[in-house]
Length: 167
Image (cartoon, rainbow, N blue to C red):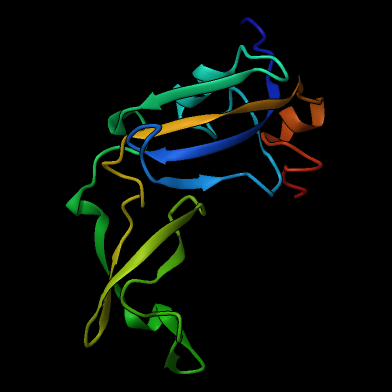
């Protein structure tokens, strides 16, 4: 078995809808850079492939089609959940409002953003499609950090320290 060197990569980036001329969806400008560890499937595979061989100071600009990003919207991801999951002190939590996005946990205890579609008599209809499903993406940015992952990070499967997780 060949040992894959996992790198910790830090990026300042901007994400645009469709193309470089599209609406900016998110940016690290004025915030911490995005820091991730390669080889652990935390990132869109095509995104990781585009930046894995860049060095600090190098810039990037590339597009990713929706099917290689967050996939297609699916009706299977619109689900009905019992209202009692959303009760606080016997009342529907105030953040449960049509159009709001709430964090739900999936069966693997991963947090999944879910949009409230409707509030029914006994259930809440939630859309757990990724907010960027069906969306072509375009990333631009600069590499601000590249280093080998520490053995502890490799063991835990995520980055520690600034920009990473501390748990």
